[in-house]
Length: 487
Image (cartoon, rainbow, N blue to C red):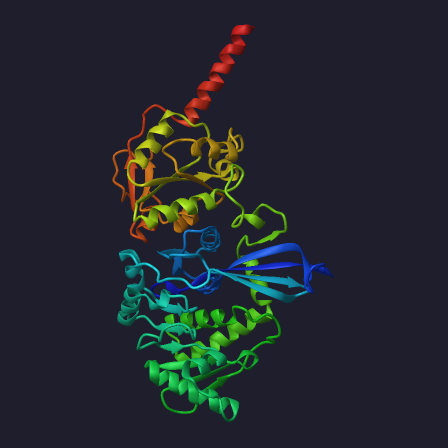
C-alpha cells in the first residue's frame, strides 16, 4: 500500500454498561440494573479506523469532534490504538450510544447528541493526506462529515480506490467509487425498492439500481449470516458465503467488512477478491465476539466505580481531569470566534520560569488551557521519585493563576490525544525547549499534529536559570548543608 488508509466519516462514543438484574423498580415496571462494568469504544468511522489499525495498518481518521468530554474520551482511545487523527470542528455534542446490558442481552439503548449541525472545514494538511491516501473508506453514519463540500471535492478528485459505506440519512456517494457496501436493509431504503420476489433477485436488482444511480463501479451488499452479494457491471452477481460461524454480536461487522475491502483494494486486489477477503475478515470478527473483543485493543474496559469508568462523565474539580471545565472554555471562546491557546508540562514545582511562559502564552489568544501530565506520566518521564506534588495540587495551583483558564490532566505518554480533542489554534512551548530553532523544527514533536487542523506551534521566551530540577537540587543541597551545620 503506497499511502495510509484514510477513514472519513462520523465517529460516535459507544458504551456498554453491563450488570445484573434481580428486582424491579418500585415506582415503575422496569428492571433495576446493578452496574458491574462499563466498556467504552469508538463507534462509526472510529471503530472502522481502530480495527484497521489493530491489524498493523497505517490509518488516518478524518472525523468531527465536539468540544466535550465524550470527544476527549474518543481521542484518547483512538490515539492509544495508533490511529492518526485529523479532527474537524463539530458544533453541538458528540454522539453517544449507551447500551444497558444484563446476561448478554441489551435492556435499553440511550442515545445522546441528537442532530448535529454541519462540521467545519478541513485544513490543508487534511486535504494533503487525502490526496496521498492508498485507499479511502467513507464510513457514513448520516451525521454530516460525508456531506462536507470541501471533503467531497477532494474525494471526487482522488485517484485512490474509494469504498463508500452508506447510511440512509447520508448523502449519495461521489461518482466513481470503486465499491459501495450497504447492508441489505440500507440498500432497500436507499433505493426505495419494495424487495418484491425472491431474496437474492431483489437484492441484485436493488444493487444494480444503486450502482447506476450513484455511478459506482460495484456494490457489495452484506447479508449477515449469508455473506455478501457483489454486483458489478454486467454478468451475474457473485455471492460470497460467510466463511465462519457468525452467531454472536454483529455490531461493527459492517465497519470491519468495509475497512477490509478498502485495504485489499489498496494492495491491488480485484473487487471480487476484496469482497471475498472482507467476508472472511468480518465473519472472523463476529465469531470472535464482535465488539466484545474491541476492549482488548484499548484501555476501554473498566470496572464500575473505577477512576476510568467515569473519566468522560465526572464534573471538573480539583480531583477530576478537568475536561468538563475545559469544554466550557472551548465552547465559549469558539462561539465568539476567539483564539484557543494551549501549552503543556509537568509543573511539578511551580516557579517563576513557569509563570513567565504561561503569562506569555496567554497574551497570544483569548484563553489558555494547560495540558498537565498525570502523576503516572511524570514518574515515567522524570523517574520514580517524581512528582513531588500530586496532580490534584498541581492542577489547583495552575488553575488559580489569572493567566490560566482551564487545566486538563492527561495520562498518556504524550499530549497527542488531548491535543486532538482541544484542537488549539496555538500550541506553546517554552523557549528553553529548543534554543534558536523555529516552530517547524523537527524536534518539536507536536508541530505536524497541530497543523492537521490548521494550528500553529510557537515558542515563547523563557526566564533563564529556572527549572524544577535545579530547584529540587538546590533544596536538597540546602537541606544537607543545614544538617551538616547542626552537627
